[in-house]
Length: 101
Image 1 (cartoon, rainbow, N blue to C red):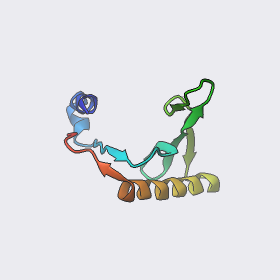
Image 2: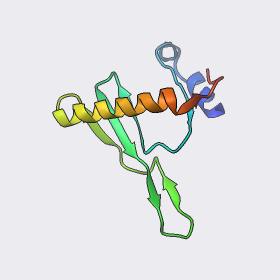
Image 3: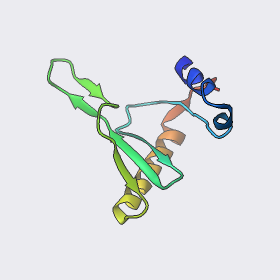
Image 4: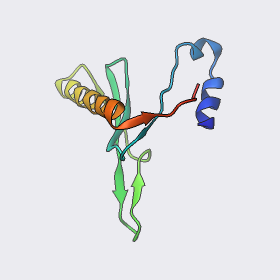
């Protein structure tokens, strides 16, 4: 949480008023992660498991993000799927981390 606070405090003053961060703890590991900009531009990543050792290792940020936008049917469908997934996890399968700002 300290890193998030430092990030927000390090933003230029004119950005701080336009920028907000909400953090949540999920009940399980979400398979998808990413961010949606203005409901039109989706940067989507997936989790993956590495079984090369006896102890499985989860990878999240190392995986390639894919870009989708509203200009194509496939992009629009993926944005709708992500939005529904996000709504479920945000409203029903997670809790808020307070005290970020």
